[in-house]
Image (cartoon, rainbow, N blue to C red; front, side):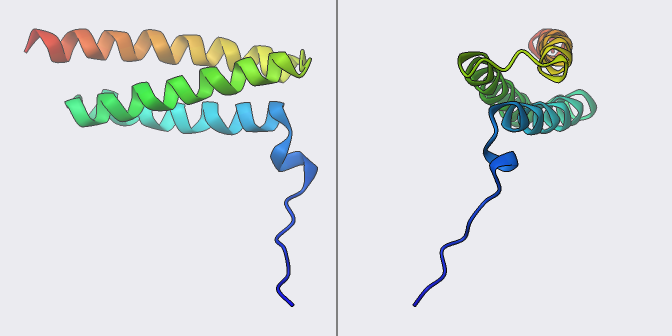
Length: 92
């Protein structure tokens, strides 16, 4: 009989998912900043969109923890940085 993999509640917790999404978005934006090319930009925008969805999910589940707010502030900064990189790429 096959075992079902069982993830911990923490991995599925909306605030944890949001935190993980922000970390991935951070890496994607840094990649786009160091290699401002269209594909890197696209990956970064997709990562930001997923993180923003995870933020909304955390809010929908009543997650008003300090960490959620810190991650949201970081996400806003990443969005601003990526928009600046996008302007550089478009001006080329």
